[in-house]
Image (cartoon, rainbow, N blue to C red; front, side, top):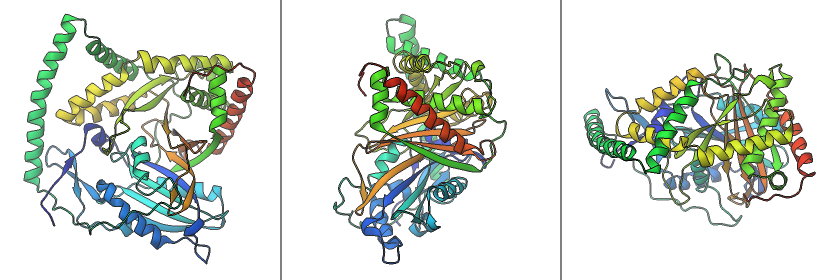
Length: 481
């Protein structure tokens, strides 16, 4: 083994470790469906050994996929250390659907896999290779802890195993990996003490500068941060209305479902009704959720305070840093508005306000900075308190993917369906992902609270047709992407 080393988790990454419970798993996931192509075997299976070698070579680009968590003694802040017992075979699982396999069976399998917590004693990821999917296809079901990756980071991570052309050369096997010796408790404690001592000195200096800038005025940046903090506190202290999607207790069991729409049709909606693709997708989500809640007997007209938690990526297109680079913002979703066009316009205005006039992201950045140089407990306990107060009803995340097809060892990726974790009092998470001309919506739900998840998929379909028909009656108002 080489010399000992460790990497301290950021406060945001550590928060996802700290708030996880047996019921609230903090892993993100995805179901990737491929045309088998050159990976098909004579017995109608998949060349698992070839995929294994391919992923093993790709691990050189994602070093923390060979690392496990370790806690600093006493202070309990998590760090990444090399797993001296790493075995790729543990993380790669090979299974098959009963033939003839179909989408329904794949959804059920994904739900069961997403219901299981990751082993904290090992690197926090699994990849299931699933045979038996009809139509000459197979699937990969990926599960990665949120402390390791966010939505955009997940897209970059896939670059290690996917290529833009079918004949692209596979990554060459790297030199045999040798783990570094995990640091001892004394070394971890000393490193954490040095980090916090240096961080508190920096924090004290920046606090004086920040207060001085506020005192003398004229600094819009300082005012924006202060405004953002007030917006966060106000949102967190005002509970969102309780709906049937906000139970008192969330179970560990998950249902998983998804639907697809042509991206060209989504762009037609935003071109005719105004705004951007994200506005059109939020309007689709609003229409689908409204129908679903009405079906369940919720009094939708009274849900004026319905809100979503919408992560916004702060990741640069050039950065290769792992972990989370996101800001969490709370956006009103006017389910109480019955008229489709009026509801669309209200969503467009509220989304624009959060993006242009709200300073929640700056406020969150300040909280993260303070937590990074002191203790992750600040952010962790803030999130726990906010969860208890129910500041939002549903998480909706939107991650843009590549607009061209991708391949793994010549097998074409047909679709990628994302999953986001659930939080306290939140039984539904919605994840949007665009790829190769298709917009995919992944639904992850608590099995007990949302046994009728398939009905939500139907309601989204009805909401889409409602929007698309309305858009076709309007003149084009292209506002760009």
